[in-house]
Length: 395
Image (cartoon, rainbow, N blue to C red; front, top):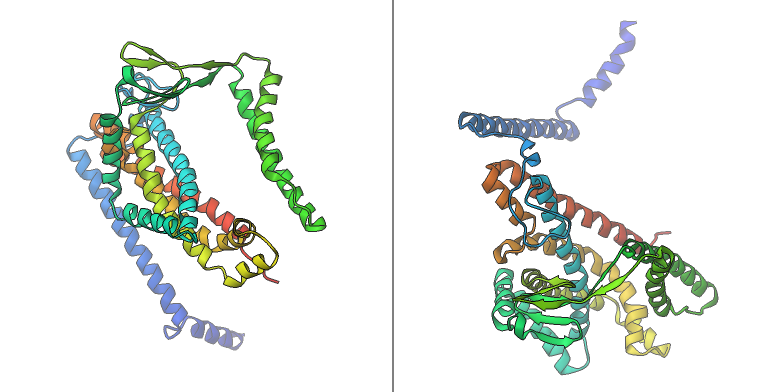
């Protein structure tokens, strides 16, 4: 029987031979992982020992302590008597608000500028090129300082506020405008969400209909009707009150309505203008990556230039545009951390205050890193999913 195992042992010995590249690669990777784990263990244990020697508390138990500080701009309910965890949540929500609004606005502005760079009008193309070159080469931090100074120093005070539209006031305290108030607001949100869902399914049906009959459905007007009548239907079904709260000047400031603070306005302006210059180059390169024959084919079909761009060129250019656009969205989200320079209470600003009060520097930095990592990975997953949907299906 022992002779029967000799071929098996020989094959096993040959498979595990040091001369095989796969065996050597596996051993090297195991050693590298072990070395990294030892390094991490040494750093963590050394840090904990030093903190213990200096009587500095560790762990995340401080999150349940009372914050004791105010936050100038909170998108959710917050009071100084709330916990540190609640204050950090306010900072995260503020960061997400800036990131989402900045991504949408930078995409729209960057797309327009990128298309303008390819315009046949010499003046429009040169102005777009100057915009891109100037905004890309001025550091974002300087742009934030510029916009913040422009808003707070150049605009008049509340008593002399500019009033371009009824109920809209522009001053060095920010932009005040009317706001809807009432118990039916959640129903309006539900109606808007339902309208978006219906619009998505309607869009799929219209594409199938166009593929079968060749007739295009007016989706722009359909979306407009859905966005208008969806919230309206939610309000009618709720039967609750809904009113328009107008801002009014009381003393030295405005009360009522909604406000876009100078900090938020300056941060959005800086992020959008800076990032849109990079987005414009991504859009321009994506359009130029489409073969000239596609333009010629669209012209042969009698399509005007703007229709050829919207219906023929841009759908093909998206396959080139989406991957680098993901990087720009991630850069915008991470660049929002510069908000601390102009006093906007994002997660970095809030956690700086938390660290100064609690002394939990390591835990605070870890929370900041985890928050930005989570947001960045979420954006990457969504964009990768969209990129896979745009990819050409191989047969």
